[in-house]
Structures are given as structure tokens and as C-alpha cells.
Amino acid sequence: MVKHLFVFLALILSGSFTKAQVKIHSHNDYSHQKPFIDAINNKVFSIEADVFVLGDSLMVAHSKKEIKAGNTLEELYLKQIKALSAEKEYYTFQLMIDVKGDWDSTYHLLRKNLKKYQKYFDRQGRNTIVVISGNRPAANTFHKYFRLFFDGLPNVNYSPEDLKKITMISDNFATYSKWKGVGEISAIDKGELAELINNAHRLGKAFRFWGAPDNQACWKLLHELGADIINTDQVAAATNYFKTN
Image (tube, rainbow, N blue to C red):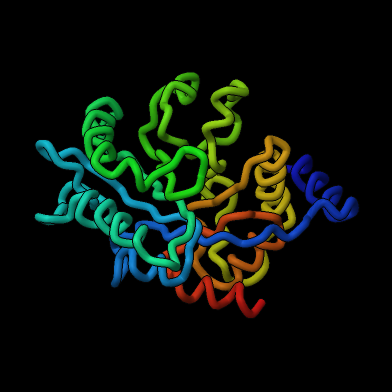
């Protein structure tokens, strides 16, 4: 713990805390009042959809018991992306697919789904890209997935070719701090959080915490610590906050 306190103090003294350009990640987007639409209207950087295999479909839901008929990845997101691509205001963002079941069966269906919409996705970033999180394949195979990118993890020694397939590094805020977004966070916790962010930056990657308090106090803290991506269920509120702060 003392080590992390010294790290935090050293970063302050060295001026290493630089504010990143904020990007918004629409966490569990499918659970929002207007999935996809609200995220796009607020021009988020990333949209998250959890998926389960059900028969020959990829169903979007937080858990198996919450699966609803018709809520497929294709209906909620792929068809929407196709429609959006025809509009003049189209912009580049990433569709994060959080795999909840086993990778192999999910990938089989995902590849089949994406094939129909491939021209709306581009590996060089000119259009939407697909990023895989959750149950991913082995990290040393990332480079083999030509049209997919991945959500990386800290403390994993990625090879240069696999690192190229990672769009960001993510981790659970609660692993490093029990702060609830009220009052002051401890310097020790700040040091641990900052160390993770800076480690990602040394790799040339953006950083995102999930599971963090979803309020202005935490958005402000993470921004000041250099987090590039703010994970939120309050897309409009977070977007407006960073427009005015």
C-alpha cells in the first residue's frame, strides 16, 4: 500500500496526470430506455452489448433469464448500424460484444451474423469496428482474428502482434477501490488507479474502468487521473457533463 502512495505522489510531482480527451462507453446499452439511439445521438465512442447463444441466434441480455424474444444482436444493433451508415452524420464508433457463453459457439454465430453486414465494418477504422470482451479467445491468438478487435486486460504480456488487435485496456474499479463516489477517495487508491491507467498508456492504449461509481464525482476523478474512456449507464448526463466541464 505504501508503494502505491509513493507512486501517486510521484505522479503528482512529475505532472504525469494529464487529462485525456474523454470518450463515452455506453455500458449495457441494450438496457437503456432507447438502446443504440441514445448512444448514437450522444456520439459515444463505444456501445456495449452482452450476448448469449440461443439456438442459432445471438441474444442480447444481461443474463439468460432476461432474454426476450426478438432481442437479437442483428435486430438491436447490426440492422441499426446498416441504417445509420446511409446517413450523412455517420461517424466511427466501436460495437463492443461482451461474450457471456463459450467463445467457440459464440464466434461461430458471430462470424455468420457479421458476414451479412461486413461492408458496414472496417478493420482500418473508417467505419464501425467490432471489439470482443468477456469470454475471449486465448490472448496469443488475437492476431488470427482478421476482422475483430479486443478489449485488453492489465498485467497480461501481449505479443506485439496481439497488442495491435487491442483497442483499449479495461478493469474492474472495485478490485482497486471501495470508494462509492461520495466524499474523498484515499491517496493510496488513487495511486493504484493511476498506475493502471499509466501502464496502459505506456503500451499506447486507452484505459477504461468498469464497475466504478456512475456519478459526476467519479467521472471527474477518472478524467483527472487520465482515464480515456468513461464507462456509464447515463450516456446523456455524462456527455453533457464533459461538454461543460
